[in-house]
Amino acid sequence: MKQAGQATEELITATMPLVGHIVREMANRVPSHVSRDDLTSAGLAALVQAAHAFEADRGVPFARYAATRIRGALLDELRSVDWASRSVRRRARDLDECRHRMAATLGRVPTNAEVASALGMSLDEVVANDDDIARAQVLSLQGAPDDALDELLPADGATPEQLLEHKERLTYMVEAVAELPERLRVVVSGYFLEERPMAEIALELGVSESRVSQLRAEALTLLREALHRELSPEMVKPAAKPDGCAARRRESYFAAVSARHAANLVRPAARPSLRPALDATA
Image: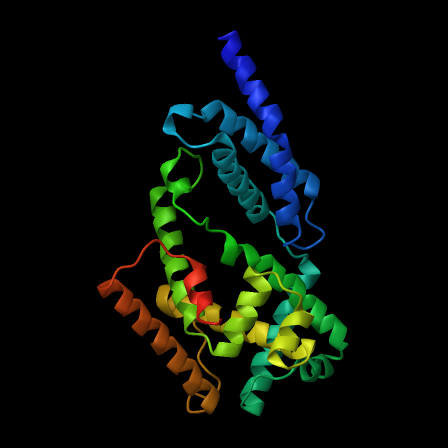
């Protein structure tokens, strides 16, 4: 028993640098006010639990097993706090409401400069607020691992029903990303999954960084509404002008997502991944 305990302690000690690596990787994707110390504590606790639960005869390397448990613990820690401050959330709601009003009036998505002028804010303030909210959502797009290891190994937390719901949401997310207009797919792929600088994406598209920020906000709105349409119809807000061009494009997009989902049900694919959806942007 003493030898087993010593082996577990050595396993923990040898793998501790992995916690720091995963914390640094994740901390770069969330707002700066999120405590790195809290993330580290959650990661270390998960490492200890992983070391005690690890079964070498399963043939899975401990580092890989521990990494899955650590990432899961960090996600739980992030979900337990509000990633964006109250002022950021409040301002984001004001921005969303202003964009909806202006879109109904203009018949198109307003630019960030137009929104800033309408609210008496500077353009930099609008872009910074969008950045904070966007980074708070990045783990929603990247939270799923590349393989099914988390479904095969013992873990505390999500129930089978919650895992099924998460898998369904991920499936719809993949389909919704695949049906985005090309420029929006490029922005989603580059900014969220490839972590490319906004300036680089702007150069590729031949537009300004402010325009990339606007495209990103438009893509997130479409993705959110597509998920609501398929999974929570009661949360879908009616279009301000049901017969307008913007409303028709929106309905066409929803229909395309539904059609893709129906086709995938007839022709089942492997476990959902965002990568195939992004390959279409290449």
